[in-house]
Image (cartoon, rainbow, N blue to C red; front, side):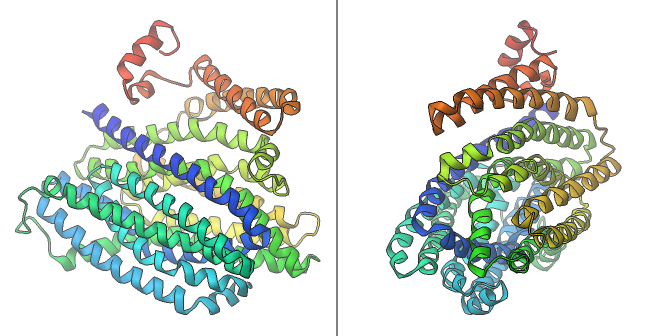
Length: 529
């Protein structure tokens, strides 16, 4: 039974990872031509407007989908279908109010917010993205509801619909408005975010109507359901610390956004040079850096309801198994991505953007990928077992460290914008260390240094050597081959090294689709034990 539940958690994560990969590819199809269309200045306005929206979005909705997912999974485990229905109603009403409030603040406060971050040109974009708050808030309720049923397909469908809407409407509107200036072109691009959010919400609403009878059956709100006020209090109790933990770093990002430009100016750069450097960092390096962790958020999303249901049922062993699998699998995926992005930062930027100004920044950021990915998963583990305030403290400490490091390094003319990714590296390194210590104390989870770190690390280091060697010989073949060949070669070598060092175990293979058949084949070949 434990293996089946863990396999279900992995299957859900696999669905979301596939959707996230598609979303990222769609995002690249949007972002790459957009950089050519609106330029570095326009990307600076775009990033500022989007970051303000992200901050507001996190404040309004970051913890609520997780809270809904956790509550739904627990009520289902206790056999209370009527309460599941009531949880959805309460969360929808509350998120509608929050989304409406957030949209109003962004729209009517756009000028003040743009002045706050030192970029008045971002005001048009902040207004254009305001409607997205309402739609995304409503989506959060439905996504948390479906995730509580460990049904990840609706979330995956809505994410793809949202990305397609952003791509189509965002690029078209940016093209139409760019003639009025970079700030208007950026506003058109972020308006696509609002259109995409609307499409995502519509797709979720349709799927809910289709699945409604299956999800609820003939269940009615009755004696098995706690009161709305009680459920609302529990929803807030779970959501607030999660939201604080998420918003601490989001708020730090907003502070960094203002600090970096001011510190660059104090380091001797002009206002326009500071905006361009920020646009290069936030519009070129950060999107590539964000791709692997975004793909791996699927593990965190699937993890919460699986561990929450196990804990509410008193099955500590199953919860430990899910947590251990999540940490190990995240490391196996994130480590080669982290090293690969760092080593190939310049050719990747050259291939995608035909612009390598952010290569040094991406080289440092790449090293943070594995840390960010593991922080996401370890945060989810702590939240799922009810230790929702622990990640809050850790994120706050990491955010403070990030601000301090950025403050001193970005003001140094010799380091300037490169201080930002160094701050990110320090921040997530601290958070991950604290999270792992807490998980060990709370769950009694024993980490195998060999299985979770050394074997994947040795494999990744050998992979890195092969990547550099292949890149050196493939450079004369052009940009596409100088990126593609090292990546393919590195992936093959990494896979071989994982088997050679015994980093992949039979239990890992059994979690995959057709895992039993694949495990038999690999055991015959003596590749796993």
